[in-house]
Image 1 (tube, rainbow, N blue to C red):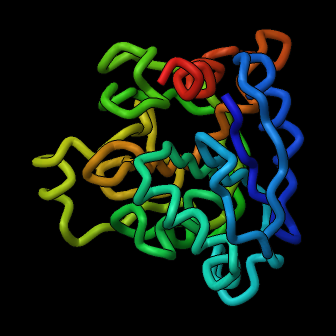
Image 2: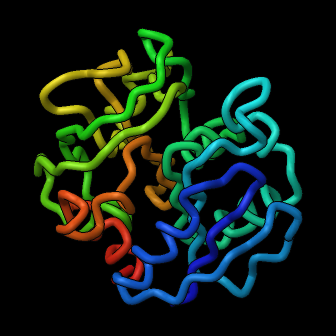
Length: 216
């Protein structure tokens, strides 16, 4: 399965994601921000980092680059799209997932391991987990606090993907730290599954995110 990894100026988790996808049995390749035609790829992944230095706000400039048109076309073709951290912020910025990821409650950069509950398994990325399974992955963000004034709609449509289990480090609404679109094919998560893809890193709980893409 050929998976495209979007690269923006400031992306810094692209190689980590590349490695995790290889571990999962996928065939990853890089896509630059100015590429519109993504038809060669069966799935798209937007990695973490600081696209355009998070100028204005995280994801704001990346959201108006040519590659976004290609991502929207991929969504129309029912191809899985995963945004991690900065990638999640970008997907929210362009309206492909509901809500926003805004400045943490303490206004500081948070970098730590977190216990997470899998709230739904209907996305390709969480299909290999069990509902309510608690997994461990790291977070690293300044703008990761999730907010959505239509929170009940998320519950009704089963669009909550991950939530913090033991504590809510960034003050997210209902401790939510991952959401998907109504179809479940576009997923935005703030934790970093690629940083938990091998036991030597402290956890391999995140590898199933990438195996799920291949399985799908």
